Structure formats: structure tokens, C-alpha cells
Image (cartoon, rainbow, N blue to C red):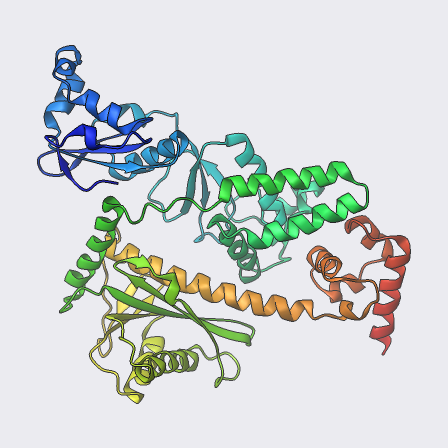
Length: 491
């Protein structure tokens, strides 16, 4: 990708690769974004004298307005098309009228603020607080894959904003078979959000775990001679790899870099900080009914996630649920270690929570003698920033880049904590009574637990249920499993 170039720059020095070009006016505002199979050929066409004689008024106006240009080199035309669409939606250049029709790629939308979020396909990205992923060019594959993910993670697919018992009565059995059924209270919101958070890891491109599970399932079908089912699973694997493969990261481009740094400088202005907070660290806690209490710390540098410095913590000194004490422990541990190792401290600290979490984080810093770092608490309900020893909160403009960066930082810390908590909990679940049954391996055990949720639920079923719902289980094995469960229950 080039830096700003004036139009007098020689176009023969531009590469012949496919890519996206950006035109700016004399005020350096983006006025047009386009894609090209060959960047050199496309850009040279714009600046030929004959072009002005044959151009329509709109094109002449555009050419006369171009003072600077830049370009992004990509690997293929399809990648150029996606990047062009993404940048046009971000900058809305006035000359890109042709991109404002209905010929848009599909996006995946999920609103985490809803009580029971669900997956939605849309062609419009709105400023409504929802998470959007995409755009994706393969509509048919995307629809099939979202249908699978909805079932795999036991999410709802119904239309009501908050489903209830009336919706449950009218729901088809085939749908309920793959739904956690929040409508009738089978799961509460926290339990449902555990499913959603697992889904979010896939949407963010971390597909290793789900691909491993599906590969195991495909092998089981193939070994049992169920080749049609194995082929279906194979296609699902390929779809997920195709759709959610890691996207090329354009965050290092000048366009994105400026946006990130603007958020940092904006935050400095709003909070009246002496220096721009280029390194910010954020803390969050996670526990479930007091078990496996953990925490996370994530770091942003120049407004972007710096995953190399993300950290997990197991809470060591706190018993039961005590978010305040947990916050004090992890902040003290983090910065005691940095001081011991003579590592630099961040420019700013953010804690997920209000005055209570902030006060305990400040106490931890005071205990180890750390001073001079800007520290704030971000209360999620109203997105209020709290400052130590200040009774009134700080409201950043809801459309500001600074607030969006802090929200991103807070959400990353929460996601990272939840992921760690879930991995510990899943490890505990897998160490189950099923391990003691001869002939039950890891893959089979995970299939059973995934289908029935727990050994407790499995005990309420029959061998016939096991045969019907778990592929590859024979009659003899089903009887052996229930004999073992009943014997353990009597003991």
C-alpha cells in the first residue's frame, strides 16, 4: 500500500497487482474508492488527457477534484471487491453513487445487547450497537453455515425479540431439538450467553475447536459406513473454513491507522490527559456460581489490540464470588510483576466496572507504590467513566471514536476472561464418570456430554434415547453405560 501521493506521481511506478485505490481532494478528504485488476492500468487511465475530453460531467468533476491518491495491493480480485465495499461503507465517498444500491454482500449480524441474541443475515450495516461480520460473497454457503451454527450452539432461530411460553407451544419439534429453549426457561440468560460467547469465537475466525469436533464426527460416520452423513459434515467443515478463515488484516494501512490514533488523541482531549494514552490495559473478572474464578488483562497499543500482551489469571486469594477482592488481586499481581521485571507500565488502566472495582484497583496500586498512571472504571449499563475520588461520572459522546475504542477494549477483556473460564469449566466437565466406563473414549464421551449436557441429565434417559441421539452407539454399549451409571448412583 502506498502513502499519500500527489497526482503528479508517476503511475508507471505503481504495481500491476490487483488492489483498491483511494482518491482524495485538496483537503485530503476521501472522495472516491475503486477496485482494479491492475492498479497501474486503472490509475493511468484516469490521468490521460484524452480521458477528460470523453468523460461525462460526473467523471470530469471527480478527476478535477483529485489532489492525492493511495492504493492497497491485495492478492485477488475478489479480495479487492471485499475491501472496496468495506472502505466505501466506512468513508461514504460522495462519488461512489454506484455502490449505494441494493447489490451488497450479505453480513452476519448479532446484537449482544438483546436478552437472547440470535444470528441474522442482513445487507445493511447500521449504527445500532450490534456486531457485524463480513461482507461475505457466497450467499448460499453462508445461509447453510449459519443454519448449522445456530443448531450447533443451541441458539434460537425464532422471530420474537423475547420468546416466551406462547412461542414455545407453537414451535416445531424439529426446531426445538436443536434449541436451548430460553422461551420456556430451560436456560437463563447467563447460560444462553455461554452458548453465544462460544459462537463469537467462531465468528472472529477461531475455528480450530469446532473443526476438530466436526472432523471427529466425520470420522465416526465414515467408520460406521454412514458415508452420506460423513459427506455432509465434510461440506460443513469446508464451508466454515471458507467463510471464517482469517481475513487479511488491513489495520496497518494508513486509513485504519489514522482512525486508531485519532481515537487515542480524542481520548486524551476528553479526559484532559497530559499525554496520549498509547498503551492501555483493561481488566475483567469471570466466574460462574463461585467456581473457577478467573480474570483477564488485555492491552491496546495505539488504539489496537496487542494480543501478544494479553494475560489470563486464576484467582488465588479470594474465596467465593467477590469481584472487588478479585480485581484488587489481579491488578496487584500484574504490576508487581512488571516492577520486578523492570518492564514499562501502561499509560492508562481501565477496569470493567464502577466505583467498587475502581477503588479496589486503586488500593492495589497504592499497596505496591505505583503512582502517576491514569486509571478509570467503565460502568457498562450507561457507559460511564469513573475517575478515582470523583463522585460524578464522565460521559463521552456516544458516537466518539474514543468511547468506541474503550468499549472495544472492555469487550475484548470480557471475551478473553470468558474464554479462559469456559476452557477450565469444560476441562472439569470432561473429567466425568464416563471416564470409568470401558470402551468410552474421549470423542465418544464428548459426543454424549454435548448431546445430554451432563451425566445427571443422561441418567433421566433410557438406553433407547442414547441409541437414537448419539451416532455410533450400539445396543450393547448403551446397556453397559446405563448399568454403570445406575451402579454408581446406588453406591
